[in-house]
Structures are given as C-alpha cells and as structure tokens.
Length: 117
Length: 87
Image (cartoon, rainbow over all chains, first blue to last red; front, side, top):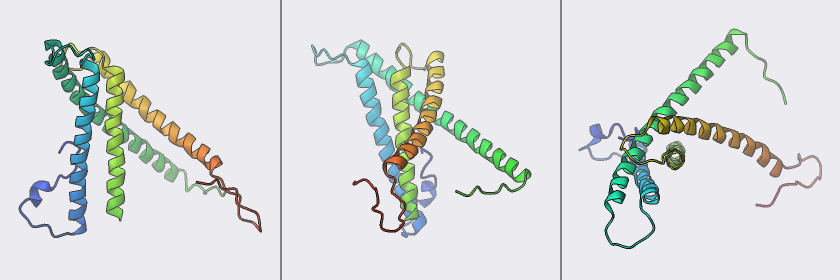
C-alpha cells in the first residue's frame, strides 16, 4: 500500500466483515488511501498538463515532444513523491529523537517545576 | 469517535503531503530531459521540503498568536460584556 495504510488487508480478505471497531478503522483507512491516490493522480495530471502541453491547439494529436514530456513528467513526479515521503520520515525521526533527548535531559536535571500562569 | 478523529487527522496529513509534493514539483522541476530527477532538482526538493515544513510551523505559531488576539474574550468578572468577535 502506497501510503502505508491498510497493511492488514491481505489477512482480512475472504472473511465476512464483523463490524468491529478495528475493522471499521481499517476500512476507513483503506478508503482514505484510495481517496489520496485519486488526489495524487489529479495533481499529476494538473502539473504535467501545465508543464508539458502548450496552449496552442492547432492539432488534435499531441506532438511527439509533448508526449515524451508527459512521460518524463509523470516519472519525475512519482519519484519526487517517494523522495518527499522518505524525507518526511527522516525529519519526523529527527524530531522524535530530539524530543526524546530533551525529555531525557529534563528528567536527568530533576523534575522541572511547571511555571504557573 | 476516536477512529474518526484519527482518520480525519490522517486525511489532513496526507493532503498536506500531496500538496507539498505538488508545490515542490512546480517550484523545483523545470527541465524535462530525463525520466529521473537531476541532482540539482533533488537538492532543491530537499530544501523545499524543509522550508515548507518550517514555514508551516511558523505559520501555525503566528496563527495561534494572531487568532488569540482576534478572538480573545474579556475574562468574565462581574457584569462585564464579553469582547468576543461575532462569527
């Protein structure tokens, strides 16, 4: 699964839905993933249309340059999608590491008194 | 309800994610000679991501401060009218 949701779907296949809260969460997450992929697709279309297709409509067919441009554009967009995902993971990891270190430092220096307001 | 909140916050995060990819794509990727991202486009993207995240943090802080002033109400002491803005 692209966005990392619905990981347990392979185990659930074939069983009738029991309506448990976990299952409902899973289903809503899977629907969310579908929705987000649709959103991604729409954005790819929008971006690559803007970048590649010249607004001078002399012909019904795409020129070869436009077709090649679109292929490359989509490939680059999907690669960027992956790059952003990895980078976000890295940043959130750094943030949680920093937070963990800060929390440990606070504990070591004794419990800080909460400042009243 | 917790599941709905979780899904909603997930939706918001993923929408921001998609938005970020689109913004950084339009700002960083200009040459389409190859199917792979060039090194300069990659470094631009990394900077773009970090900058967008930093700006999101700053904007949310500034928004809290500004909306705190905008929507501040007088503390209810006695018969004072509240100074809340109409919504």
